[in-house]
Length: 306
Image (cartoon, rainbow, N blue to C red; front, side, top):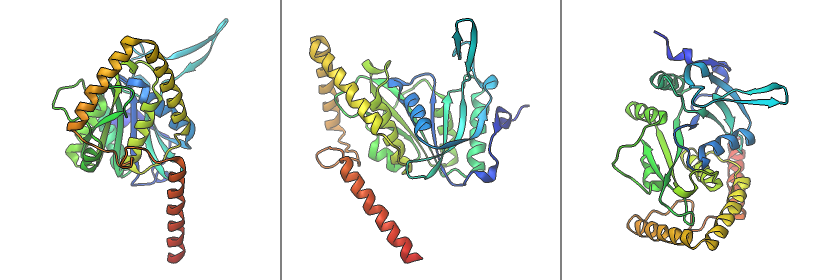
């Protein structure tokens, strides 16, 4: 019988990977509304320093005919094969804090053995916590903050952020299985499922990626550069608003969704810890000032300790 370790190749020696790091996971597959997970994965790999730790075997896990890889054809020949990637990496956030990042495709095959492999890696590297993100379509308006439903063992995150707590049956993904196994083992884990407006589910919605990154920050304390995504989100919403103004049927739909959303939230008051009493996010200047105060305080503490 083949072992879970045969699903991957190790790219870094064990002593090169610090123990006790947070693990962040985002896999694309069955559903990725607003392209949230794909955007986050691409954004983090573009913006952050990272190195491969473990590379999973495509031939064991991927159905090539269901998700055909891209080949670049130039006039008379194939010049590039864009190999699908499912990779565990050692990355650093904006302030240089290390963490483990697993991105790529959701496996088509061998879910049980894949999850066993992840559990082995979590134990090997002494992972402190596991956070994963996902996005589904919901009948909610784009004019309201993107809500999340939170699952797992991190009760403080569930109480602070989870706006929707259904009792239902859902089509599972491999990270549901991972969370179930981690919960059974008592490992600190949180799954953030973004509730994306259903009429934007099939397009890239930058604000969904921002919410995903904010959720990861809430769970791990890691900080990520989001200025570009936020600007893209503002431009995207401006285009949506222009379309709504020109289409009375669409405006009526959005209005109905706003009424339903607001009525639901009246019965489920949940203010994000990131906002002030008026529901506004802090400005970039105030965040920078708080960061300067924190760094100055830490420097003073380090000097005293020295």
